Image 1 (cartoon, rainbow, N blue to C red):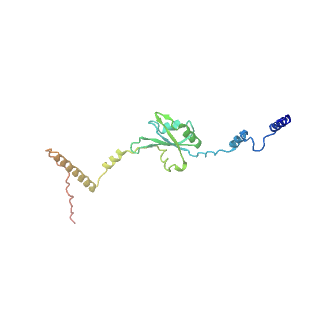
Image 2: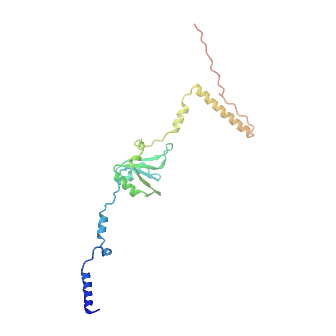
Image 3: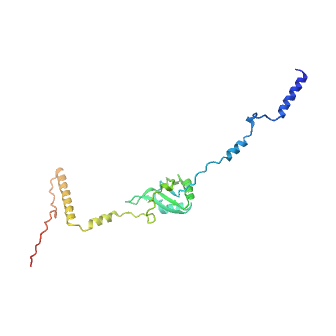
Length: 214
């Protein structure tokens, strides 16, 4: 290769370096700023706004009831109603309940921040309840508070009421049946004991009084 050919090759190399890249060349070296901008411009799907204002609260510790829950959750916002599930007979807590806030946004904050919160060695389980799943009778009688049923008073009233002749006769028959079963059990046990007779078990029949006609 002569001197002229060497100079000619050098000019070609310099001309290629000075010229810009052709279409389709150098794609691996393109800046990524354009792609990042396109990704940023894509709008992410927004989460639907929560309309649930009622929260389910589980694992409620002993002593944390309506008044205590009302006072504790008021620090987040206005509390509308509180209900603790209780046993109908004893009135004891079933350790779960519901609370309703005035603002659904406050309810969402409470559900996010207070779920799995450790309170009196109990981990609270809090979850929003959708409006369509709130039972129609959930807040029935919540303003009156829980009034336990006095079963003793009901039974006392039942036993103390005046009985008719038929009711009294039926009661005596049941007493006699129980007494006969008790006698059989004593005899089957090999105990030589003579049970005293029941007084009043045999009632005299009612007498018909005939009045003389004048």
